[in-house]
Length: 398
Image (tube, rainbow, N blue to C red):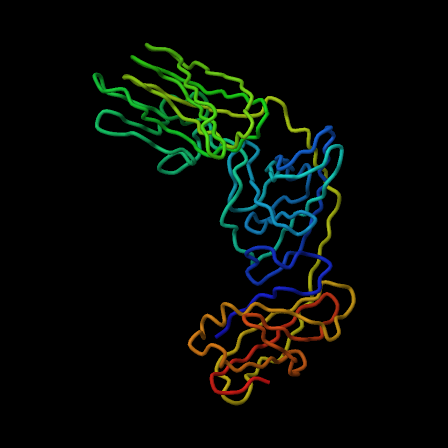
């Protein structure tokens, strides 16, 4: 059994020890960004963006390893968009990519945020924050345009993702309703687009029509926590015509949280839709600037890997790290044993344990508290080494 288990706590002056999905590795770079609020009112959860290559030196960094925290170590969800506004979820950062995250800054004040990068063993995060309308030009996707949902198709109401007649780019979406069919709300729509209350927004989308009878255009719904605050449908008109814009400005009511936006062909005929936008009329006053960077590379102390004698059937490596410039003498570490204990649940508290420092082959004093293992070890400055945890169903702990 060879599975590196994670330290819950260790002495470190460099990085937060509980960044998500570390893969057993650590972050080599920590960049500090200062966010300034020049306005006379606090901004809470307001999105701020930093541009790769222009604002921060993160070009070619792996997207999977990016983590963003506030100064108290609370990890934040974030968004990464290309210079064209498309989501970036894998690969490496490129010049012009935008890192977008929520910031909490007092009126006329500042707040600092930490961006961690370069952990080759990190896993991708499972979720990103949605910072606005995504793929409004319908360019991205595989079988369907990404982020857009189909609703209401049947034998008389049809939806297509097409490359035949885009307003811009290569693709748009198309809705066809057969002559004589009942009008319905067949549509492509995008849900849960974040909004802030009391902010003026501008919606814009384009429509093209052929032989339309009824309404062809767009709709927007705005929701609070439990109520429907805005319900507007916009039609570009009946008949046949080339690309027409639909534009509407509105101020979000108190309590507004999210918007749903979708296409409309409430009638018959054919309509095409492209280039939807939903943006604040006024840009956020928040400004971000790169303050500095700390980087570190730990020296790996090699140790003895020979198996301990006796009836110790299982061994689990624990990696301990010291990010400081001074040695740690008889330092206290806490490791999370939940994954290990789960594998031996039939033995419950009868599982025997002992720990060996592979660098000097000394036994490490330890104590188990439920699913936590507390132990002591010595560690050289800016180094890492392996402590082996041995397990037995018949031997006593020592």
